[in-house]
Length: 73
Image 1 (spheres, rainbow, N blue to C red):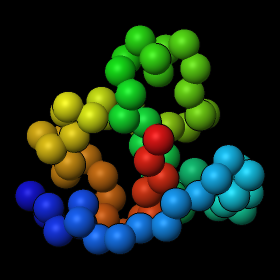
Image 2: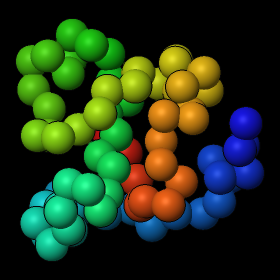
Image 3: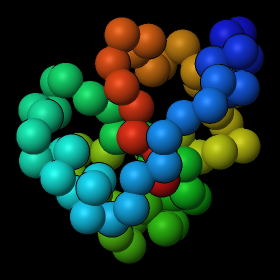
Image 4: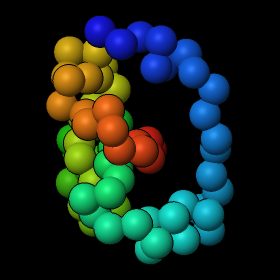
């Protein structure tokens, strides 16, 4: 497990900055990670977002590409 990655300071983006960032990067350049519950994801999510509920993240961490920036919401 790469726990140090969770402890590395990251930049927080507001809605407008996030929207612009997604618009400037293709889907294969970034990972959009939705850590909410499946019922919340089903109701609404960012197109192209990957669902890994927060309680499952430590078990599914290897599904994330470490070479890509990850936007988490």
